[in-house]
Image (cartoon, rainbow, N blue to C red; front, top):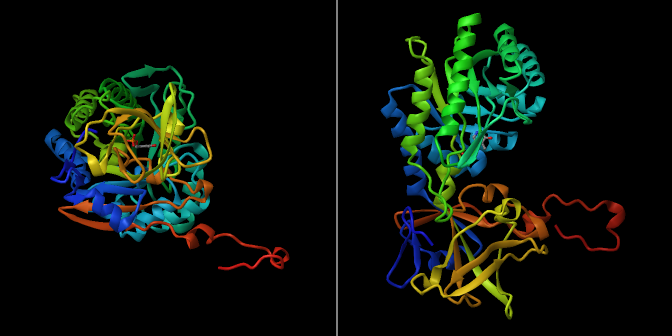
Length: 444
Ligand SMILES: *Cc1c(COP(=O)(O)O)cnc(C)c1O
């Protein structure tokens, strides 16, 4: 496993994160356990803020909270001066409960319900990223009733789709999100937003993909969005204060991944926008971005205990852990690949090729295919790195497995930030109708 952030191997040969021995963390909190490296999260936040300060442009960096949304995480992001993206009333609730300043909250989503719009309006959040005409009309109507005038960005699809090393330039984009620039829908949306009395059009938004390792997709998207903005600015006199270029900055999961420095992405985007607005001094928009994965992804490690194994001669050896697709659905969903090490024997040479299986009743519940480990046996601890993004936030209770605890480690201290789910949590929402009660004794 690649050691990054504050991860090291201590004198006992144990993996240590944030100055905390993972063997001790297991004793204190049990497994499976998500371990979040606070220093690394803060470093990632600062890398973005510093890179933008160096461009001299006005900016906002909004953490896309869907990657890992808990109240403690909202506090860290707030302290680092970032803004926050939410996509549902649940994420909004989490942010508000954490005392996140509502003016720095942005609401996304392609199907915000009237209740969600109302909740966000009542909280007076910073802006809505409006996805379609129905939402725009609905927001305008609800805002009118409340005597409010929320700021909005329009989500546009610039005809660029990026994934890892390539980007695809498409004429008209087949996407459930946003207003298409190519077919004129985006222009129509700008004109409508400009006319509506109860929304304030702040700017445009685009998000081209995820886990992107090259700057060219961002550059082309930035050029197209900025070009579109400048044209409409000249045509109908609408001033765009904000161009938001979304998230998607890649991280290193395995040695095959080679992410760029944060500053490279930021400078490429800033330069592309500046170029489009050259000669229009005084009208240079602010740039906003929305990193999720790259803020928390490599700051997370999941710790498991190894249990059973099954050796099929000449085929493979399966080694099972006490979690799986319930705490990390990404391998099953996207064939995502992870690295791992035995946390209690991190110095031992990895000599045995095994495949790590989860404990769910699904053949597809495989955490890692073909990884060399140091002859794992029952009771060993397996640490899987780079699980900070889209693991806890996508975790489920399949097989009624309780969701793991999350601890935040920093300078030799560990703090529980999400408790392990209890058996009560598992049956909390179950209701047994009276007519089914006579034959069972129901305990709550
Ligand atoms: C998911 C998402 C992000 C964050 O993407 P990452 O790949 O985690 O950086 C940002 N903006 C929007 C609109 C998104 O849907």
